[in-house]
Image 1 (cartoon, helix red, strand yellow):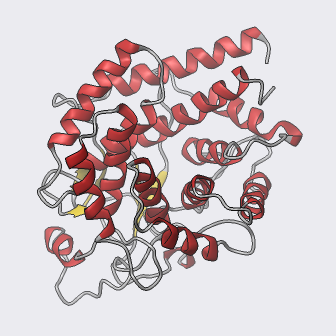
Image 2 (tube, rainbow, N blue to C red; image 1 turned 60 degrees about the vertical axis):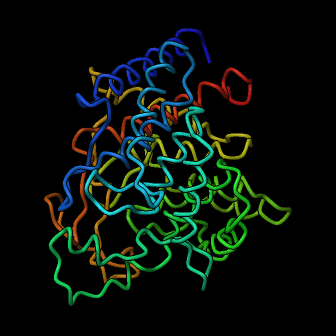
Length: 354
């Protein structure tokens, strides 16, 4: 990479960092995704905070640690965190909050132990996967759903939740539940190489996080699984270097950033320069304020639905069930692009990418 291009990459990362730092609410946390449960605070803060925790400067790490302490203070008595302050805790929000605390060194042993116990209480003993809610009727009542509605889908193991829970447990140095969850991930990869997402409108989210989970617990037979996933990601790249979804024509920053991370999970040659082309697309589509445009990312299936990826028709936007929702504050998109470009920068510096 020539010096001018590298300087542009560094400026982009810095602009994204300033946008994310400046987008915190007055209470010091982030919020995004407007649903029937309101905006998410703990889940979004855990995700964005974790993405930003891999940046360098001590000054930045100080304010990020302050944000992490705020998150730690919001841990419920049962060890979990919820979508928002008054929403019942769930496994996915808890996983991201635990990962944020671990990555910033702000996790206390007691908080980590309680959080890990909460996660393990959401593990499905039948298949080893993790479900979002162990008692979804509580969140159903909170969201005003009728008590007669089936929660079979929300009670099922979800690969997008399982993969992140595995990462949270490993980073928290837990020895429980990990191998069972990894076995489900290994068994659930499709013939094409991807994994299906439950709560996300595309397969890239579950695929990338499943790849990262497999790498963390990698055995001799896992290399082929990662190769198949990487081949699938490479094969879905659009002509302009981006990755998109079925809800819009053209590239979407969130999916493009996730795809780049997936291609970088394992160090391999990059034939055709797919990673570099994807990174260039992100640089070209960053907005002036340092953010990236949002997209219809989050999927809210009917609680009874077990395989939402088989449904093609969804309501786009709005506070509704059976809908796909955008990150209207652009925080998820920007944090994911920031994370992907930061990792890309490190691999360039290490000489692993041109």
